[in-house]
Length: 269
Image (tube, rainbow, N blue to C red; front, side, top):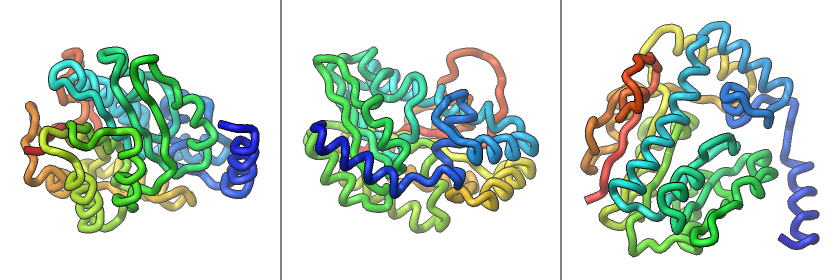
């Protein structure tokens, strides 16, 4: 990045970054024990925790699922290209770190449109010498734009793993959310994979905690019914154990953790 480019990014961030309004990526970062958050983010994080303390477990279990899924795809299915949409802020064991630990030549494209994430792009733009890691500033609703930009790095004649972790809840209408996912999956070649997780309306406490969160001024997050989440995988070949609560997808240990969220990995025929 040139000095001119850096100045342009700084100027752009100064006009786009609002630290007075909580943001989901920064609240999530707070729950994960990160440092890239502000007072309003921490305040909302604590309010949600007061109603639903398990939200911290949910955040950590989602991150653990990412690690297990990426390891499985890279080690067991030979995937070398990952498109991580709605990646949020970098913490530990990001997609590129997990994938390149297994396959140093893996290519990863991160997609997000939060100015704080953009300000930390350099932290994401690290890679092994053999692989590639890059970041594009796009809204997930712009599926065509996401794919167009991703093709500058990824070879869409070869399988790609599409990662949508904890992001589709930001789209309120289930039909619109399905259309976005279907639009992205439609551009993937045969042999690609969809990996998803999202919060689900499976307990009264999680429903109440998200109601309070949505009233905080942050970008709203809408819980899905399990049936709605399952519909994202229509037409795809589910990997065992199928669509299950997040901690139950190929768990690393036998510990029982209850999380109001579901996950799945599926192959495009």
